[in-house]
View 1 (cartoon, rainbow, N blue to C red):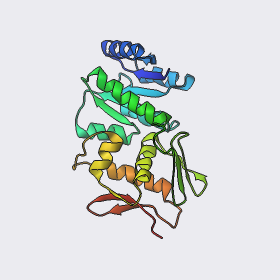
View 2 (cartoon, rainbow, N blue to C red):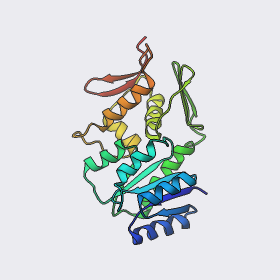
View 3 (tube, rainbow, N blue to C red):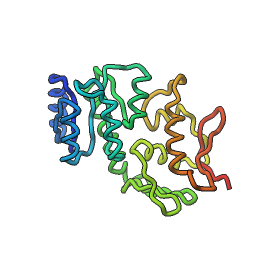
Amino acid sequence: MSNICLVEDEQKVAAFICKGLEENGYKVKEAKNAGLAKSLIQTSDFDLLILDVMLPDMNGIDLCRHIRHTDNKTPILMLSALDQVQNKVSGLKAGADDYLVKPFHFSELLARIEALLRRQNGNGAEEEHVLIFEDLKLDTWSNIAERAGSLIALTAKEFTLLELFMRHPNKVLSREFIAEQVWKIDFDTGTNFIDVYVNYLRNKVDKGFKNKVIHTAIGMGYILKSDK
């Protein structure tokens, strides 16, 4: 049974989500504001966090950013009535792993949760769980990333992005493909959040190494390859 923390101040929405999740076998703890959420997160272990953007005492995006200062692993799903692309980008840049716009069908919420938990726990025995490229190693079961034997601290979304690259080595991945595979959204050419996240990843994976492995394919996207 997975433990979920729901941070939502609208009572009817919270009750609807909790009832549905509990009927599907999840254990849920509620927080009506950011302050209560911080206390819950500090004293309990959760497998996933669901954060509403509009909270009475703190913006949910700021709460997400606060959580990411000490927790890079727990998946975070943002909920918001704000559907503008920039709001989604802000949530993703703050460290959220997914963003769902209200109103939504419960089946979609459930599917997003299941996908995030699968990613967190390893996504199936049919896929190779230890990926190696040059001196880069990724274990998708233990969520450990290494470069030349040294651990790399990655957020959940950075880990997913690196896994995508390592499952498609020496292939140019378009921004559209990356957005669809990692964020499950259509890419908006007016935003640069894909480039931002690739740069985050590049700074962690390539910084300090002579052999760079994440390269820009100008006008096309990005590619994982050796520059030896």
